[in-house]
Length: 168
Image (cartoon, rainbow, N blue to C red; front, side, top):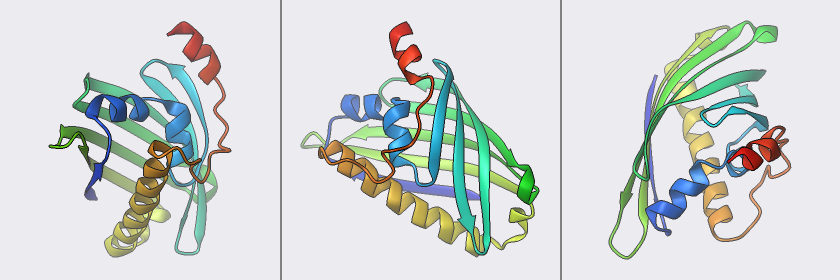
């Protein structure tokens, strides 16, 4: 499944870039994120709860930043599974930041995702609808964070972040 989404964000590209690279902020903005653990500067393990139709899954997802050109491009590879629902996922995500007149930034995200197993049996329309809803919630949470409000889900566990921040 290929998904491409974009959003105009009312902040400069450099500020948005810093926010997107902060695992603590992303843990609070990504729908269903239960926790994120920093493995290294370019690798993270997240626990994400997703409900697709009548099945709830709890994926353990390992994400690795494969390429980065600050503050305009990032590519990451992710893989995860939930054995309790016999499902796995793989994805390649690309993030593009394009400065706009007036100081804002266009955030464009392209994802190639593969969902296998029990959850993979749902049709493409069901999965695209879920992806659309998750994007809308992410966008609301991101804008709320940039505006100073606490995003929904800010209580997500962020184990390992303090140690990572000390190393940086």
